[in-house]
Length: 437
Image (cartoon, rainbow, N blue to C red; front, side, top):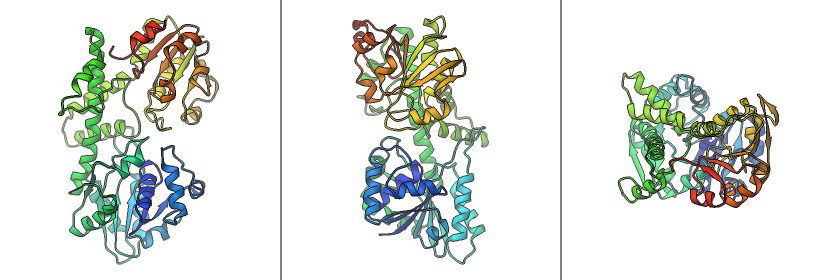
């Protein structure tokens, strides 16, 4: 087994580090936040991710998993250093590589032996070449450092499973030695390995994420047309999924994709294409459709209502998807401010996302309206005159149509995740609007 160091303890870095330890490697996770390090040392995960804390505690106890702010000692004798820091979106759509550069410089100034630096973060094509040159520019000792690309393909909410049971491992290298080291690191995983060049590995990550974003936006576009022509998008998806060329994943219509990957990666690839004078028309369309789709429910509700001022609006689901507390690009962040600006009394429920949402929208008077947070969907629905569903949590799915009718003052539901059959809601006496049906 090998001595590995992971820079960054967000979704990418922490999940990778924990899973490497689970497979028997000795892993040190580096973070600049001392409070965060102490939290992780106690076995508490700083991110909400199913199964992660259990593996942290297990591998902490086994002595295979360590956390530190002392990057100098962490990098000094590592066999391989994985960079898993953030690459947030810049205002122009490009990726901010400042965290990558900071980690690369720290590595260059700290390593005391030959090692492999592996970039797991999603980075524009050609970044690994620059990272390798950057490290060589700042090396202070006579050691050899190579850089490899190893993009992650985890989904928030299933990140541990996606890492331990990945469909494939992508490694991008420029030497046989680097390839052999990465294959040795991943040997205990017993998963298919696709070995390509660094630039191809970088492109595989973007091409994969952007294809899924395209698929989502396409289904949402078709759903909007279904409403106009009298078709049902769920029937359409059912008929499509049996075609092996299409598959059954990412066919659910809704109010757009969100999270840390799809919005950022579509914009980053579009920015890169523009830089080279090429127009990615399909990706442009996906971004445009997604931006408009997030407002689909609010537009429907606005057509139905005279005003939201003074109304109690139940909001069920705040995170961009179930299984995570991540709010990045969540439809709730687009729609809740619009309700508040029009003077609504928003009562919001989410099983794990409330604390993050509360930081952006403190409870009480907010803009022209009010926002309150509830401990159950039923509490949010009590006396409400309108309801919006933004996230398909099981706790929300479990609310039956009869509950909406019983608890709401006006049983009027706008469902952005198509959780219910329209006829079931109508039979229960609920006025119901969904997507593409």
